Structure formats: structure tokens, C-alpha cells
Image 1 (cartoon, rainbow, N blue to C red):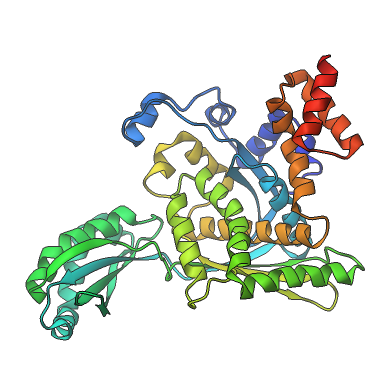
Image 2 (image 1 turned 180 degrees about the vertical axis):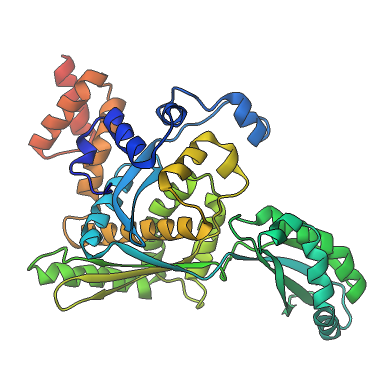
Length: 419
């Protein structure tokens, strides 16, 4: 079954759910979870976080037209923002005929930092840590034999001297292969357990012992050929490239450019129950790794008008542990994605980010962002203006005919219908 479905956005929610249920082979209970018939109960929420008083639902939509590494896939996305899912689906349509998105993965490597202070001889301490490397790694792996049995675990150490205002301190980087887990709990456990041993080796005092969210050894790359989106309008293509070029050279533009990328990535990460804050922190830090904050994407304009796009960023996402297993919607989302490894999941999420960015630049190069965004936001505004459920479609038809989607215009239309 293909992920390309004509006018999917025009179908009813029930029809969309039926389509994805058939595509992913969902059970009756899965369908009830997605439709809200089986709710995410307050007791389930209470097992996940502290001081629970209720739940806060976010709309879950479906990105279409995606082919990732030669496999058609529907991508669930959890977001409150209009136009995000429409934009990625539109962008994926341009990439589908040329084979969709192709990805690569540097591996599921996470690092923990162990900070050692109060050293009179930091370079001497650094050398002693490297001398006891195998003992330290073996001790860390004793903390998680299950991960080791799956081929993961602590695999290396990196030690460096960091000069601060107060002193020269030693920082140990514990390098861990977390396989299909995001890995935060694992590496934090290893770091905390190894702290007394490192203190004995160095004679210093361990302060911090926690993972770093700059996962620069867990990098995902995705590429796609977006078939000529501008036809014979070469000026539009040049405007697209100019808009991209500014994000490479100006951090003020790059910040907004990358925020657009994260509109898509964060929505997909949230839908799978992964840690959105860790992903965003890592992505923005990676964008500044050269010392200047830059675009996470790259584009090249082919002679035939096609646009070759790539994205590169760290993605610490997993399929094991946390909300990925304890939240019923997240578990069902994983079924829809039909992914078995963190590598597959990372490739899909990176592809979403590239598609989101392409769609944003394409809009900027032509009609601008606001026209399409406000049109999709009009349904929310109609509700805000007091339109009844059976009036909203009529409000949108009149607004489209008059070519205005401002709140004042929507309010005026609502008032006219209700007068």
C-alpha cells in the first residue's frame, strides 16, 4: 500500500483512521486508542509523572507521501500548530517520484560527562584515568548487563582538561552504545556508579555525572531530490536558494530556519513518546558546532530545476523504555511507523525535518508563509470567533471567496451568519 493518497486532507477523520489502520494492520484496541474511545487515563498518567491532576491532549495527525529508504510510511505527528503536517506532506510529494528520502546513521552512541575538580595535577590524573580505562569500562558495563547482552554498553573513554575561571578540571566522557534505547537512564546510572572509582584513581572530587544532550556521535543524515518545484520560473528557484543561503551566513535567519525544521521533528518525536527537549537542545547545539550558528540543511540547485536537499543533525531517539513503551498512543504510533530499530526511526524523523524545511523555503520563495498558514489557521479562528460546529465550513468558504483570513474578517462573517 502506498503512502500517496489523493486528497487525504479532504477525508473525514474516520476515513483517515480506517486507511492507516489497514496500512499498519492495527488492532481494534489500537483504533480505539487513536480515536479517543479508549482514553489515556489519569491513573496511567500518574504512573508516568508526579503530582498528576489530569492529561493534556494534543492533536495527532498523519503526514502522507513519505517513502524513506525505499519503504512507504505514514508518519504520525503530534502538534497544535496548523500547516505543519500539510507542509511536510506537500514537500514529500515533490520527493516521492525520485525515490523519496534516503538516510544514514552514525550509530546509537551517547556520552556521559563526569567532572573531576580539586586536582593539583590534572594532567597526571588524566593519564591515570586512561591507564585504568578497561577497568572503568568493565565496571560500567556491570551496571547494565541486559544492554551488554544486546551488544551495547560502555565502549570507550575520552578524557580532557577544561580550564575554568577557578581551576583546571578533568572531564571524563563515558562513551556508551545504547542500541535501541534513547539511553539517558543507562548512561546516568553508569556515570554515577563510576564516580567513587574515578575519585580513587585521581584523588579529586566528582561533581557532575550526567549525560550530554549534544549527541554528536549519534548523527542522522537524510537526502532527497525535490523534483522541479517551480517549473520554468527560474527566479523563484533563485529566491529559494537565496533564502537558504541567508540561513547559512546569518544566525538571526538560521534560528528561524532551524525552528521550522524542528516544527516537524518535534511533532514526530512527541508522537513516539521520545524526549523533545533533548532533541531540540542537541539540534541547536549541533547547528553551532563551528562556532557560528548555521542551517542544519543544505540545498543545491540542479540544472534541470530539481533541488537536492540534505539534513544532518543528532537524534537521540529510542524504541525502548520511557513513554515509548508506557504511553498507549506512543506504542500505537510505533506500530503505524512499522519500525524495529532506533536507526529506522531516526531516519524517518530526519526526513520529516528536511521536508518541513523545504516546504517553508518554497513558501518563502513564492507567496510567503502567512497566506497558507492563515488559511489553515482559519478553522481555529472561526471557533474562537464563536462559530458553531455546523457553521465553520461555511465561514471558511466565505473567507476564501473574499480572500481574507484575518480574525477581524472571520469575526465579521460569523456575526453575519448568526445575525
